[in-house]
Image (cartoon, rainbow, N blue to C red; front, side, top):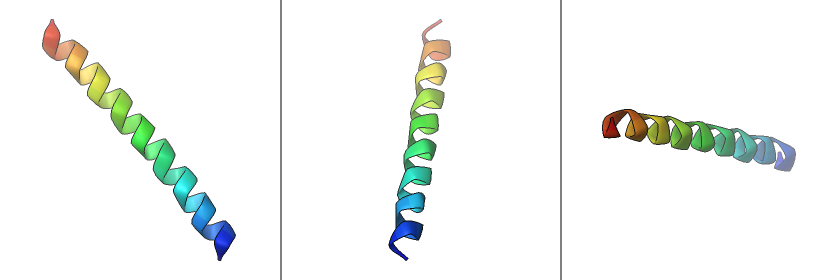
Amino acid sequence: MVVFLRTLKKKFKKIGLSIQKLKFLYGKIDMD
């Protein structure tokens, strides 16, 4: 069960990072 929670946390971190990247790219496009 603990391992399952750890993998979930890792997945959420990856998702959060990808969302940040998308927001960053979107902001760059908005600036142009």
